[in-house]
Length: 73
Length: 97
Image (cartoon, rainbow over all chains, first blue to last red; front, side):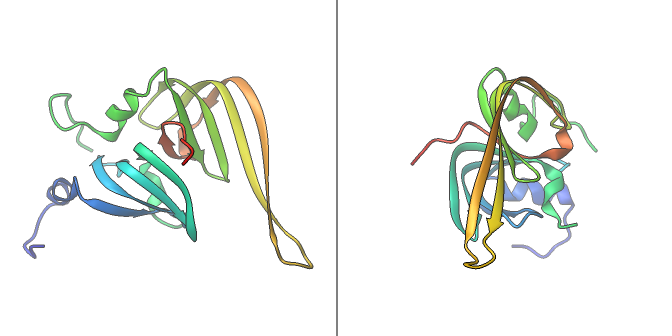
């Protein structure tokens, strides 16, 4: 990871294709490969697994997460 | 916010478009889940779903044993407008195993 200044959109291009963890305000974790995202932080993941405390559901294929859910209120 | 044209990288919303007229699974706030056929959607994730089954899940805690009792309530709705701000996640229907 470089420490030079980059714009947010550069960062977003960099992390596409990597395995990521998406934490939602509800406390649920989604682990998957980042397929794409947009400026509203809507996210498309592949091979997603949903974790609440232990593992609950498995989602294969694409999962779309609405961008407003990433921060607790 | 910048809008991307169709000849650049697809947005997540473009990929939802591929699910039009397919059955999808929608996870909503307040422990609600929907399974239905996606007829329409917009950038807010407002959606029109047909032939929908809604599942509301509640957890009751027994006062004496402190065990968690999961209860779910289902209902069927032929045609439904979903307001996008309640949507958490959209996916193809869950497959078991």
